[in-house]
Picture 1 (cartoon, one colour):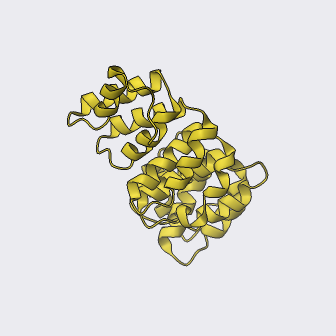
Picture 2: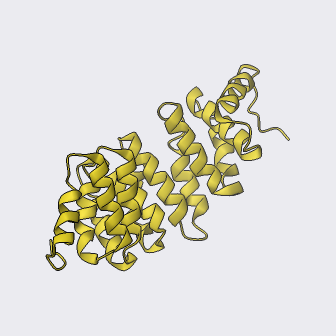
Length: 222
């Protein structure tokens, strides 16, 4: 990649991003974000794809948000085609933090249904941030196709994404709660419960959904 002037500080930062010690990598990412230079963008994205430590990845994302969106966003979009799941997931996460809606066309149905749960979760979060006004109902339908997927953490992420779209999700939920798959019905009922009462808690909402199903109702009455 193109590098800024090769002074000692610059070289130290670049080497620090690949340091063996996570604290060194963290400080290097902080330094890049504090004094952003477009020449660092490629290295930051490259590191996001392989960085094992969550807190360092978060600092890398922050550093990328400090750079011009017009330069960072196209490179992040390119990363969405990576074969490495972490690369896709972290690029989606960073796009959601930047919030530039020019990235919306890159949030494809394939990403929203990615086989890797972490990628899909990142895609859901990015989608609800980037969705253009007027396209929320269509997005709700795409997201609802994932109801019942995965374990609790994945299901909670999907419920939060749907709820972030607001009451536009209600027709989709009414369809979900009559689905033949009990996992879809349970998840749909629980999501509706959380939409009505965000303080309820996901585990409580799931247990209530199971009780409602045992009674042979949908929880949508009234």
